Image 1 (tube, rainbow, N blue to C red):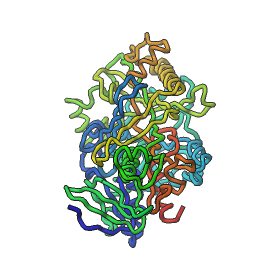
Image 2 (cartoon, one colour; image 1 turned 180 degrees about the vertical axis):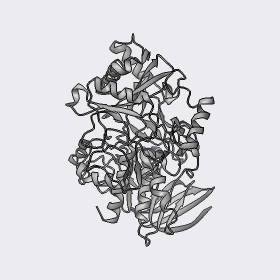
Image 3 (cartoon, rainbow, N blue to C red; image 1 turned 135 degrees about the vertical axis):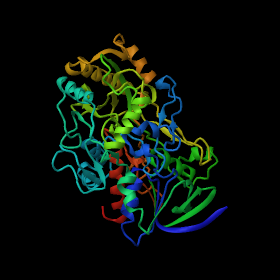
Image 4 (tube, one colour; image 1 turned 135 degrees about the horizontal axis):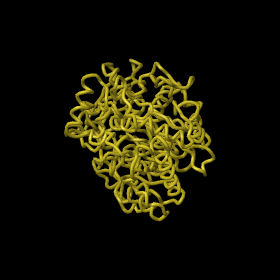
Length: 534
């Protein structure tokens, strides 16, 4: 049974980092009727809002879509988890809250590839507009203080996280108090998207303050089945909610903001994508757009694990008496390990082949994390090292024409020798810091890959056996002007009217760092493009 159509000026699909921004900005005009559709539920879980609750919401089917790759032949045929946030706030509900924008050259490269208006000087004002930056140290001219998204220092940092920074500086990196300012290279504490010791998700920042607007309709549990079209014009969307099929029409525009996994998925289910692939699935081709689902990128990450000489880490903090104590302290005065984001400090390091431009990012965690970021339960530390600019490109394709069947995600990790070389260098950098002064005095033996693992073949095997992603999928509806571009610099889907994409999928190339802040920037700029203000 199909419910009657409802008319809106704008329909935003996906209430993640970019979608919440656009719902806020587009509904600021009381005459504009805005519909925000989210396939997940409300952001009610208390573990979403407690920073250290991340492992209670990641891998939880209520708050995570729990996507995974196809078996990766470059990673010993393993299936790699790809967590994606489910519910109002999207992946900003389940990420590690690290606020990183990327490098100036990332955006200048976008502009050089034909994405006019997306150079660093073009996008910096949107980063600034989004920010309510409360950090004690920040570079002047790069930050805002009146925006919706709170960026702050944590009320608690484990002593080992600062010792990591000291060791990295002693190993030769400059100290950097602001990775989002004049330059990114160096070591320091990460700024986080927290407000008063609570997660400041995109929903908390942008959506909750405007939920009372009479012209904004927010629907959860709304699973998109297809875009509605008349010729080359998108006229609305059909979705299933509570067992009913509902069609909503758009007098203005439909904006896909469902993320790098779901946005191309919805396009292909609607007949917009590579014609041969759609024919294979029995889907009628509305528009042959070969770039949909191509150009998939993510940051591949390895973990150096070290035991500590003494029981001074957060090992076991998520279980038993330690968990109860941390929760009690958090509820009592919003301090202690309940406020940690895990990856409390980090570093950006330039490998020899990068001409001084950082291409390795490290996240330091004051506990040992094994497969799928799970606590090993042994006192120790983790240094993540990831390749910021991978050469590998993957694909996202349909598993079937069923809109409720997950797509097939094939990242094609470590198909290039260059990417494997970068991973090896990341491990070398992490080992060098671990062996340096302040940190070396605290650590005992190398737990993984192990001190005896030194040869290239042995290290390559370790990387293929253990590497996972930093959960930064992007690029699957890339912006550009070439034949494989899905959207132009105005974010309009090529060859279609009334349809844009605005999320991580439009990134032509992956930014050098975490992706939440760039997605919020994309939402801000998209709103201006739609309103004619950009």
